[in-house]
Amino acid sequence: MTYTFQDIKDYEQFIKAFHSLSGLDLNFYKETQMKRRINNFISIRGYAGNYTGFLKALSQDSQLYDAFFKHLTINVTQFFRDDKLWGTLREKIIPELNKKRAPLKFWSAGCSAGQEAYTIASIMAEYFPDTTFSILGTDIDVNVLKQAKEGIYEERDFASTPRPVLDKYFTLVNRKYQVKDILKKNITFKEQNLLTDHFEKGMDLIACRNVVIYFTDEAKDILYQKFADSLNPRGFLFTGSTEHIFGKTHLNLKSVSSFFYQK
Image (cartoon, rainbow, N blue to C red; front, side, top):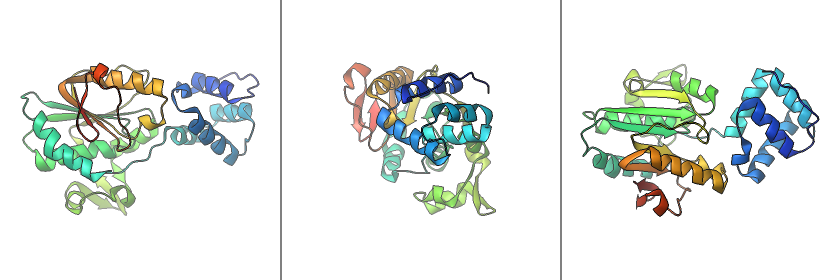
């Protein structure tokens, strides 16, 4: 990475320069939260008050850049997070989708290290073995996508996972858990910026959970409209357990269960 820096004195100049460096536009994120996270990281790394020096360091040190990018994009999740909602998916949403004949298309948007995508795959393998489906997992952070493709996780990632699922679909290797190929075979992971990149059409289920809580209201409006456009008729959007969608009418979405919205 190379970039020519002028003297950067404030947060607004910093996020503009970082956008040029990384392609990530922090204007879409809530300023108070993001500013606090950035300044905390910069201070810990010894660049307090020195935006210019920190940006120069980012451009020269790939490990620092990767650590900072991961810090900004907040990759925190686990398998079967909010287990009751996954029960709703299994008992109500997928049976509704199974009424259609075509193969089902699922999308884990902002998939982090793949825990959510593999959770969907395990539900399909365990309860709907005769259903043909594909899963797309996307995230802006290439480092967590690498882990998703490898499919190796710590024990703490499975705090909410039913023990039979863990034993059946994961292999314990050197105190870590490796996803079995039966879950991997239907999943594709790729890099994507949710706010600026093109979305595939024809999705039957989009799971975007605990991602938009960090976005501005303007960014949320953009994203939810793009999700609605990406869904098939009668497809579902599955949000996080603190993410209610207001003004669903203009999006052509209706609430069918807590945190599930149908087109």
